[in-house]
Image (cartoon, rainbow, N blue to C red; front, side, top):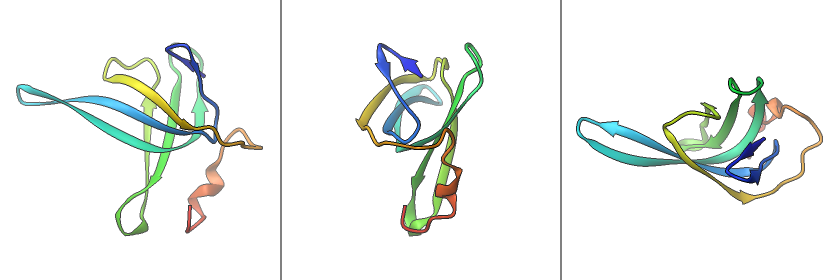
Length: 95
C-alpha cells in the first residue's frame, strides 16, 4: 500500500492523522495502532487499524485510503507479518 511515497505493509505500527470538523473548527485526531488488513483496489482501497484502548478493550477503525479527511499516515515501526490479514489479533488479550 503506497501513500505519499511511503510503503506500508500489514503488521506495521502506524499513526493515522484524521481531520475532524466540529461546528466551525477543525481538529486533527490521531489513531495509532497495528495495520491488520488492506482490502480493495484503487480507488476503493480501505485499511483497518487496530489498537488497544482504555480498560484493554480493542478498538478497530476502517479508513478509506484516498479519503480527503486523512491528512497523513506516519509509519512508527515496521513489524513483520506472515499473513495478509491479521484477524487473529482480535483474540489475543495482551496485544
